[in-house]
Image 1 (cartoon, rainbow, N blue to C red):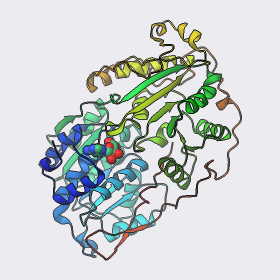
Image 2 (image 1 turned 60 degrees about the vertical axis):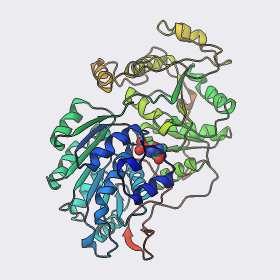
Image 3 (image 1 turned 180 degrees about the vertical axis):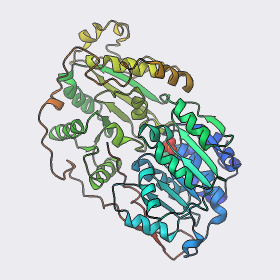
Image 4 (image 1 turned 60 degrees about the horizontal axis):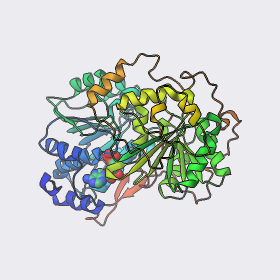
Length: 494
Ligand code: AMP
């Protein structure tokens, strides 16, 4: 299957070709024909599957008839609304719309909270065909009468499960009530809980249901390894792994904002360039940290779950779980930052005894046992052997990662299993799982914040700002489109 066979226009195919995509990903091959046919779609796909192009390409095709270079705002009503839970995801979608639509005279804008609303109002008043928005800021704009949906034909809800997790259901319902009933609605979600299905029932008309081959589970191009380690040896093991494996770019996850800052600071002190991204950093710091990491100017990005959500870093080779997440589904989201669109990735988890239960929950969700590997000199082997349920799975001396295939199960069975977990096991915090006191000095030593520092020496990236967007076909600038610099992405609150 090629993109040309999907029936997209030459302008869109040209842009896809510029991105170097050869074939559609499985989710793209499935959703694009249905969206082109004007059907409502409920698709189960997580980030990394190519889902953004999956809905953006046919959306652009359907709006292509409206492409025009008029300066009159009336000629540019909002034709498509794309809602996303976080500002990073919203910015990434906006970037995709711009990339894939660069040969079309369609305007796009992205709006999200945490920054000045005025340029967003100006962009909307100038007129945009495609609006990418997070729910809260969108409603602020609605209240200020800055946006009108009377001509909106397509609605996309991306990462619908995240939106519900983040409490956006009332906001989504308020937005729905403002949209014309005659429209095409598309919903993308990594998981399909009862709540999501209920939302889909109220939102979609006779939807085509599409399930990506791999869903709510880890991608097969990602290999996993668990290193059992005592809490007070975690940092030393991390340094060892970074140095020994000569990691050029790794995203490290911790559970708290404090932990993220502290770990980045400790790595920097050991001459490993690192920046942290979390909710206590302002928009500019987050944008800068992410840009530095993406450009390869810093080696390590330390992130919390919410701050890292939706981050798309091309060819990120390693994700390291310095601490396992309390919510097993976050493991899937974390490691989904690597192994994207077919490239190889490694997910390394440093696990201590108090996280045993968290690991068990993750393995239950994935329906797979993750491979373990002992690192010489970090002798948690004895400790790991003492864990009755894992002693047969140690692979001391095995230098290869995650060579045991993951079992694939259906999303339904996995999520149902997950829902059946007793609440005491579900989302348990790190201190609940074991008897050993958590004593990682990284998180017990006092942290001294470095004012306005990203702990790196790279030049500062420009702040998010209003830009004018020009289309290739026209010489003249189109006024007042709000956007972020394409390389600059930032995190949502956490
Ligand atoms: P997404 O799941 O939308 O976040 O996309 C994940 C990554 O896959 C992005 O970096 C895209 O640029 C890339 N991608 C999307 N479609 C394709 C394709 N057909 N072939 C190769 N890479 C793709």
